[in-house]
Each structure stands twice: as C-alpha cells, then as structure tokens.
Image (cartoon, rainbow, N blue to C red):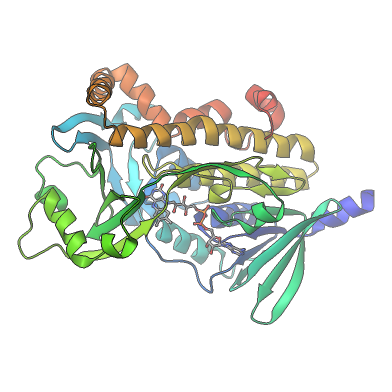
Amino acid sequence: MQRQAHDAHELPVVIVGGGPVGMTAAAWLVQEGTPVVLVEAEPVPKTDWRASTFHAATLELLELIGITAPMHDEGLVVPVYHFRDRRAGLVAEFDFTLLSDETRYPYRLQLNQQHLVRMLYERLAGADGVELLYGTRATGVAADGDGVRVEVRDTSGTRTLRGSHLIGADGPGSTVRQSLGIGFDGHTYPERFLIASTTVDLSGQIPGLADVNYVADPHQWLFILRTPESWRTVWPVPADQSAEEATRPDRLQEQLQGLAPYPGGYPIVDHQIYRVHQRVASTFRRGNVALIGDAAHINSPMGGVGLNSGIHDAVDIARRVVRIRAGDDPEAELDAFAGIRRQVAVEYVQADTQRNTERLKETDERRRRAMHDEMRSIAADPDRSRDYMRRVSLLESVRRFGVGLPPEQDPQAAAAPPG
Ligand SMILES: Cc1cc2nc3c(=O)[nH]c(=O)nc-3n(C[C@H](O)[C@H](O)[C@H](O)COP(=O)(O)OP(=O)(O)OC[C@H]3O[C@@H](n4cnc5c(N)ncnc54)[C@H](O)[C@@H]3O)c2cc1C
C-alpha cells in the first residue's frame, strides 16, 4: 500500500483542458517543479474572443507566476465603471481606486482571454516537466488506487494516461465531470446573449460613456465594454428569435445604430451568440480528481467574475497538490479545496452574477427605481462603495478564505462542507 502511494506521487498531474484555467494550473505546477501532462482537444490554443476582465485578486495571483506584467503590456487599465439606464443615462459610477490601500491593482484589466492562454502557452511550450498534448481528447476517467487513469483519443488511436491527480478544467460540458457522474444543477436563462464587437470608439459616440458599462432596460438591457481590440456590446436575444435572424448583418447594424447613429455603418469585427447558465457542480472533488473553472461552475458574464474565480480555483488546487505530493494530508487538502471553492462559487460568483443580471433586466418599474436608488446610495457612500467593490472584484472572498491555504491555517476551511 505504502509502495503504491509512493508510485502514484512519481506520476505526473494530468490536466484535462487547455483553456485559461487549465493553463494557469499547469503553469503554477510546473513553476513548483511538479510534472504535468496537459490534454487539450483542440489542435492549437483557442483564439476566440470570450471573457476579457481580470480583477485585482486575480492579477495578484498571476503576478506570482510572472504573467501579470505581460498582461499589463497588452491590456487596458479600467479604474471606473458605470451602472447606467438606457433611458435615464448614468445611474452610478464606481471607482476601484478606492481600493488603492489594499491592492496594487485597483482596477479591472481588460484583456481578451485568448491572450492569457497564449502567454501561458509560450511559457509552457518547451518547459521542462510538462507535456502538452494538443489534438487529444479525454474520453473517460477512473480512480486507480491512489492515482487516476484517463482514457484519451488522438489521431493515432486511444490510450490510457496515469497520473497522481487529475484536474478537470475541460469547460462547461466537462467529460471529467460527466464521467464521474457529478451533477451540474442550476438553470439556463431563456434568452441567449449576443456579443457584437466594433472597432468604432463608442465613447466618442455616447457622451460620458465609461470603458465598462452595465446598462439596465426592461426590454433590452446592454453591457458595453472596451477591450484593447474593440468595443464589445452584449444584449439579449429573445427565446423565440432564431440565431440566424438575430445575427443577420442588418439586425446587428440596427442594434448598434440604436445605441448611437454612426453614418456609414459600424464595422463589426466579431459576433457570437451563446446560451448562459447558472450552474454549480454538486461536488468539486471525487478521490484524486478535482474540477475547476467552467467544468465546476458557470454563470452569467455580468460582473466578469466567472473566469476570475476559475483562475482562483486553479491556484488553490495547484498549491494543495504540490503540498500533497510533498507528504501533506491529501484528504484534508482536497476537502478544503472542494469546500471552499464551492462555497465561493455559490455565495459569491453565482449570487452576484445572478443579481447583476436580474438588476439589468428588471421590468417592474417600482423595483427598478428602488434598485437604481440603491446603486446611487452605494456609490455616494465611500465606505459602502469600497465594500461593494471589494466584493465584486472577488477581493473579499480571497481575503476571507485565502487561495489554497493549508487547511490548518484557515478556520473557514474546516467549517466549509466539501460538496
Ligand atoms: C461566447 C462566450 C462568451 C463569453 N464571454 C464572457 C464574458 O464576457 N465574461 C466572462 O466572465 N465570461 C465569459 N465567458 C465565459 C468564459 O469564457 C469562461 O468562464 C472561461 O473560458 C472558463 O475557462 P476554462 O478554462 O474553465 O474553460 P474553457 O475556456 O471552456 O476551456 C476548456 C478547454 O477544455 C477543452 N476540452 C473540453 N473538453 C475536452 C476533453 N474531453 N478533452 C480535452 N480537452 C477538452 C476545450 O477545448 C477548452 O480548450 C464567455 C463564454 C463564451 C462561450
């Protein structure tokens, strides 16, 4: 039995999924000298435009693997964001610089997620102790004594990889989660979200617009956000409208022209339509298998915290796996991971993104006005505003639970149920 444990710890950690979350876990483990095999179904790192917000707590963690500085070379520093109303205009302005005494990064850094993946890929490609298996799909997983076995398929056929631990970072449709029969309860919004990006500077078209704006409206709420490449707008597509209809060039143009007329037409450089869910895995851990990122929790993009919390999951599990492989108590560490990260997903990420989304689309006039008053009064009070921004930037959850602290150092860890 002892011998088996020794053997398992000589095996690499297998990570399934080379998105931003799996790549962060890989980079962290490799920096700590832990061998990694990363399995990614796509033949090359994905380049599609998706999440683009990095909050203070995440930048603090990525600094520890030397990625925050290059992200700043390419990203856009955004200290202020607006809560607006489509009819009434600006409702409340929130200024992250109120957090300057607590973090070196009192702002949102806007950078499309594929750039983080590229930076991590450049770090990992050719590094010692890491094998990157692109074009390789995990098809099933099983516990193997005190290690794991992962079935994979590539163009040459199927084979089995063995690892000491498996980190499932394979996104919302996670094969790892499904192979283990772990539930993914929650709900799917009836409307889909449509993203259309233009190179026109929308702050030049809409007076007073901030670089990040959440715009409430009972019929067509909006999310307008600037990234280094473009201005992104997001709006809802009703359940009864087809994707083809919603994404017709004249429809997209009509939507943007409805924000501010732009003679000659907006150049639209990207558009995507997607379903949005609020779901959390019933447990984040089974044996030596951990679920992180979208494989463990998915949510509305309102607030830009889903990817951020996924990166926190990645650092949390990586720190624990390093300690387990050095001899620390595996059960206490993995239970602490599962308990804390699930609690953060439910109490912060799900709760806040759900609330942010409901706030934008509220149709009851009385409740709308009350919400606007509430946002105004938070913004007007520096103490409440500071508390609010600590929460929305995930600093509060990170200060409360830490990220991957040894179980005995955090009383909350012992209190949190594992799943
Ligand atoms: C269109 C779109 C727009 C979005 N916009 C926003 C936004 O504005 N703000 C926001 O906060 N979030 C947004 N999100 C969500 C955000 O992109 C995710 O939270 C983030 O990508 C999660 O990263 P991840 O690494 O956990 O998962 P993913 O990025 O999904 O990466 C998972 C990886 O696993 C690979 N994989 C899957 N199955 C297997 C398998 N069986 N074997 C091997 N590899 C596998 C996939 O190819 C993929 O590379 C958006 C998502 C989409 C789809």
